[in-house]
Amino acid sequence: MRFNQLPQWLDYLEQRYLSVSGTTQEKTLQPLHAIATHLNLYPKSTTTVITVTGTNGKGSCVEMLMNVYHDAGYRVATYTSPHCFSFNERIRLDGMPVTNEKLCEAFEIIENTVQKKNNILTFFEFITLAALWIFKQANIQVMILEVGIGGRLDATNIIDAHLAIIASIGLDHMALLGSTRDAIATEKAGILRQNQLAVCGDLAPPDSLLAIAKVLNVNMSLMGKDFFYDPIQLPSPILLPNNAAVAFQTISLLQHKLPINLDQAAQSIIKTRLPGRCERYILPSGAIVIRDVAHNPSALALLRQELSQYHQHHTKKIIAFCSFLNDKDIIGNLAVLKDIIDEWHMGIIHEPRGATREQLESACAVHYITPIWHDDLKKAIVELKKRWTANDVIVIFGSFRVVFE
Image (cartoon, rainbow, N blue to C red; front, side, top):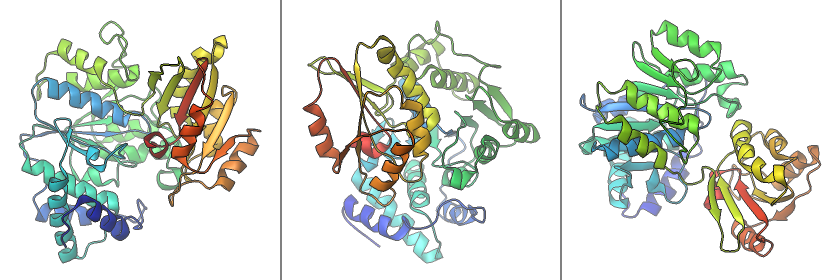
């Protein structure tokens, strides 16, 4: 199979793989291991691997660690999902998205192997194998992998991490991971490895996580017990302080493998920013715009903290524009912000996973929210701009797709 252009490849892969079922109890990672072994995709012994999972905070941790090691002169590869602006963002070398040509080359090699072996993969699994192939061609020293969903059965888990990060544990993707924090923690604990290092940023880690770590003899550092956010060491990071503390603890634990100046590392962490993570802009009119990909109650609770400074003093009118995917806890999400938003706007995500207007209306009715409806995400922003004044805060949230538009 061969295409010359990346859009052709992505169209083909979405048609062929996107409808394949994701994580199930019967699923195994054996098909991925078979392909990874055949193509020798496992990292070299000289590469240090960090795998990052968590309900929230994964992307921030990855970005901070990438900046730290890149600034220190290491050759760094990162694999993240989803993307905000271009697919290439998912696979980066030293912070730079890989080229279309390199992606096409990787896709062709993986697809030919999949067809020969007659394997059935999901879209994410296919892309993960392509990323590993690209990384194997580069002379990298640090590989940072962001888990897609969960951990135990995630495609990234075919790689053994020298250090595993569990940034947070909340209720999301419950149909796949379980309906309790204990069940979800068990899935995320799947990235832990015998006698290896781990960092947990959750201030109340479930007993199931601690039990698994004990059985595996994992050297796990716990936020609030073994390390803390230190405002002197990491003053006013752009991203959330707890995630900054997790990143700093990670680099401290890996000093024996990846020596680094900790003062320089702290500066790299402090300056790190990431699209769609509580991004704040002040427009020429004086209005404030906040973009956040938050899409579950725990993430929206953090967004609420940001908004509360305006709500508390009643100096700004808070206007929300949002939409959600149909597998999210829409009622729970709206509950977090229902009493802090002054004016609601909602749009429709025209994708198979996008929540329908009927689903959104039903969730709004529970909280007596009456939004202004928009059928087109891009046109919605144009309409909203007509309403903005210097005394407004406009918060855009709910999914990567909404923030992207």
